[in-house]
Length: 202
Image (cartoon, rainbow, N blue to C red; front, side):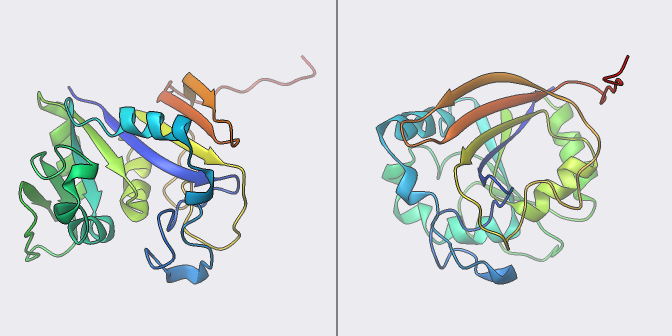
């Protein structure tokens, strides 16, 4: 069984929208697209290089993230070796969607069930980048095994959030953490059973 790993940039107030540029995703009133750039340094670049390795992973993307990537990466593949060759699963409600980017596979209909079936197969881990709406579905159905977060020292207010309508009670265990020179917290978590509670007065 392969793992499903969500790889994300996130602000202190939980926004995950438009990290890469002002025009990346302007919906929901976000005004600060491109908020990752000022915090990138050599340390961050090394972390990103490790997390972008496609030797032992395939990609699972939502429709909007796929459209953005398909318009960019095929022409800039030198910046992400293997991005064109790796299998890319694309979740969409549109069963007639045509995927022109090589090695792209459409997942339509009951996406949660299809992702569950993918996870049960032998094969590389599935990495989810961006794809805010898809992530809500994955969280709701408890399909996320790990979260690889880069937490940026800013708040943005409006914007799509990591933990929104798909959030369920769930415990996670911190497996790795680092802090970059510019204050970005790199934190990896894995799913760790149910939420436990205790009274502090006991």
